[in-house]
Amino acid sequence: MTLIHIRSFTATDHDYAAIVALHKAIWPDRPDTVAICQRRDAVRDKQAFFQRVVVEVGQQIVALGTASETVWLQRPGKYAIAVAVHPAYERQGIGSALYDYLLEVLNQRPL
Image 1 (cartoon, rainbow, N blue to C red):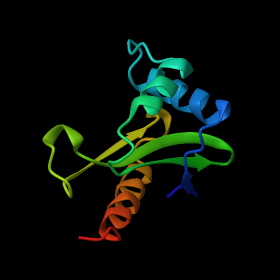
Image 2 (image 1 turned 180 degrees about the vertical axis):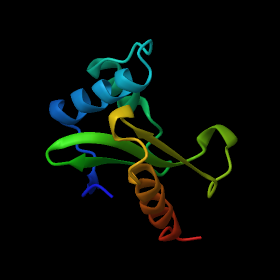
Image 3 (image 1 turned 90 degrees about the horizontal axis):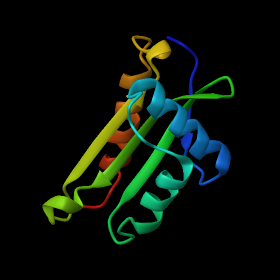
């Protein structure tokens, strides 16, 4: 497996630009921009649990994951996990490691 580093997303121009580039590599028709991602974060329900993490190989962000309460279900304590891995880094165990990490984050949440 490739040596990876999982860390919290930081709301910096660098991290936003990296996740926009990652989205475009996976979904080329997706109209994301840094401004759109920042706006989504600004209007996110602050009462609901949300954690975004990134995976780095070297200094490059190659994957993104989120763990969040499913606010659309309006049932506290129900969660969703999303994982996105750059196509050039698929099938190296990165997505599985990221999923396991996020599952552990949720397992640490109080019931």
